[in-house]
Length: 191
Length: 81
Image 1 (spheres, chains in turn purple, yellow):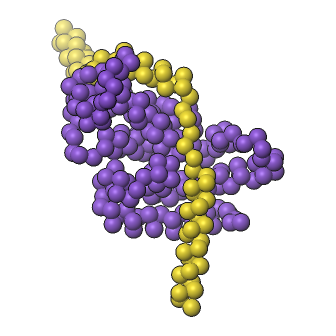
Image 2 (cartoon, one colour):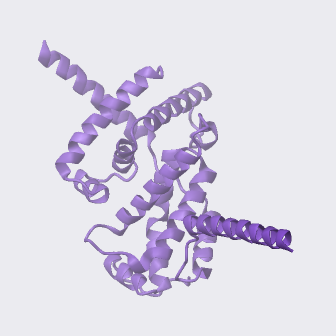
Image 3 (cartoon, helix red, strand yellow):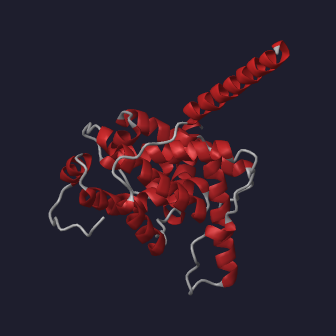
């Protein structure tokens, strides 16, 4: 895949070109989406190495099936999220025996200005929050991550998840309630 | 009383939303990984044929049945002679 020479290419153009077998267009779509897909997978499974592996599979699968992609007027990322969602489900199925995912090795590096105790506290808080998130249902996790990682609106999330905006609003409310219950169950103490 | 409970609920929700937005920050994937994947994708032929596990299963069962039938046939031939 060479560097894209097309300067003002839009996503629609890139998708159309990529469907026709243009590798530069697929490269453009890859660069536009790889970070968000990686983030989504990373937060869903909690392991950087597995997130890289699944991200690779998402793009290989997308590349292999790009000819059969049908543009339904939703963002291209919606298709990638769907592939990622299915591969994550397979990953969880294959890893059923593994009860706990190591969380400590993939936390953000603390800011230098933070005090050690505060850093530990923050990390501990994040571990528990992530633990609680991974205990709620897959669609609720997807919604929470799209909303907070991607900063997407309900309308955009609705497009990606293939639901109505109203359904997303109500799913969001239920997701927060479920998350709060899970947090209480695992002993997360709010400040 | 009910409105007080609702207020408490809403406050908790807002607290939770604030926590989520403070803690869920995007992370950058390893640039080496991103470049390697980009290169590998570029070297991959445009049309990929995914191996079908089902087809492989049918082939294995078929081969097994064939081998079994062949063995039975050879044994019956040997017995006759």
